[in-house]
Image 1 (cartoon, protein in one colour):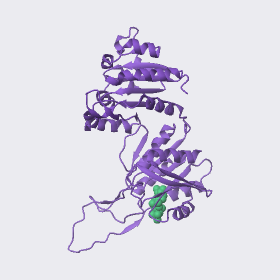
Image 2: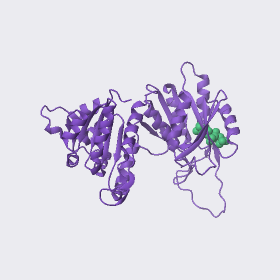
Image 3: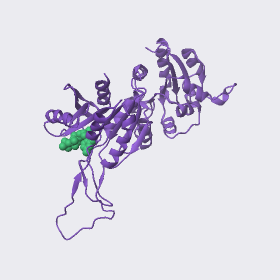
Image 4: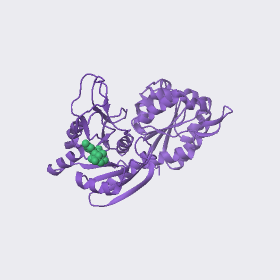
Length: 396
Ligand code: CTP
């Protein structure tokens, strides 16, 4: 499974460091090339001799101690297919999340362009702290694969969450990531996410409960599969791919349409408002003596329909167009009608009346409709998993 793969292991200072000896052995048994970088503190828990014997390679700690000095952090980062940092301490998580490069391991992490797995291990108080969770959120947003620690007896004598996850889990995740082929390499995938924001006056707007999570998971998945991704979003996110922030439906339409000619696939996961205020006051509207107020709304352009019309008229290569469909009743009947009305290649239908899935939830359950009349239900799963399955439906 790992034959010839170059795995770089990072070890930081924590008692779980000794468990990584077993991980190296598992990788070597699969014929992987393993190199190890330790932080100076890791050396308090494992010896260089042990790690060198198991990895059959030099163990790197201090880049300035290398006699024939070359920028080791760049060459180690370049030659590895994956970087597995386990155990990773609260300290190293904080440094990597904030771009601090004060040792070889953190410098390599900063320069690393390929997948990184991190498996934290620490005292449960540290794990639950706002600082550590905030830093992890940053790394999660940047696409790091985080293997959360498990509950159990901790070296500090307490019981709680903080124990390094099972070594088998780190091994399996490494295999899973390295086995993933970059099936969307060279493809440009454009995804919209979030609810549009339609201004009413200088301080008020109309929007909806869309969190943008489904669209973001789709963009993440496309990126994992090697695509050149553009995420057009009303929700602020930081990602390793291109993000274009927009507010209103009009703005979203302009940006999406400007991507049409170069896109291979456009996924309209955004919850676009059907109407906007006819006039937007640049001042705050004042309260009046009346008990009622009337605001006139006018129809927004249907971006998805517009894209499908552009596709019908265009000559040459055109993108696949994927729509979403939010329904609170008669999901399947309405979805069938909607795919025909809009003219898109696929329509992903979800039931927004359910509280356990959809808007703001981390879970979803959808039915994928194809323009040829076929359909497939994707059972309830995390939005990340649903995104994976949607790409399997689209690209086979
Ligand atoms: N959509 C769009 N522009 C709009 C409204 C919706 O591009 N003005 C897109 C959405 O991004 C989604 C699809 O159309 O991909 C379906 O959106 P949905 O809200 O389910 O349906 P609507 O077309 O708005 O129709 P209705 O609200 O009547 O169900």
